[in-house]
Length: 230
Image (tube, rainbow, N blue to C red; front, side, top):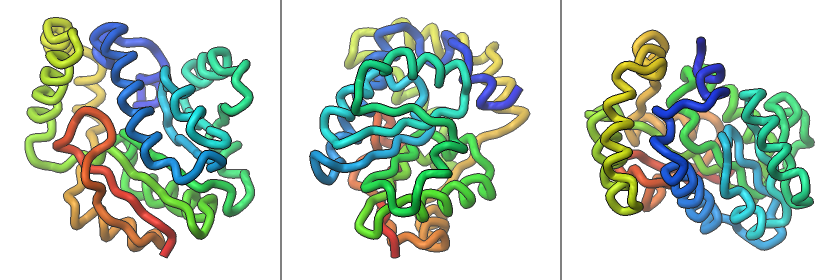
């Protein structure tokens, strides 16, 4: 099993219940919406997951293209949004084949931790090509190396307390210790970066980056970077 295979199926350790799932995606969609540069912007959400609130983001832009590598998740996305003319769902290969300078905004949120550095750099090169010269690349949910698991647990409990699923979050944290996620994390690991390191990686990929004032999503111990083509 790899990370794509893991996320291709529903697990109680990813979202502790349906309310967690729905609030999680709504917060992300609303946070990304705040970065949409104009009502006619072409937006690429790469590695979007279930994207249960994609309609919120689509309503704020000209067109939303979502990319998901997991085939079952991608099929569910296509079925959910097939009636929305402002949303397209593509494979990574289809997205990479789009013309240079297609997108005004490209978002890679909560994906980098599952990639090797070489994979992340290759993806950034593709984004640099697909982004318009005036566009913005958002790299979200970058996990710092210090006490990442502890802060993730604390953030989930706070998120649950604020949104009515605190005890479900407690149970979810207990389940994760005996789950495939925990096993996969030990065998494949997660990628961690501090702020200076990620700024250097982005500059090396041809971007002019800065750390955003807040992270997209509920975990504010993680980082979001906003970059324009250099």
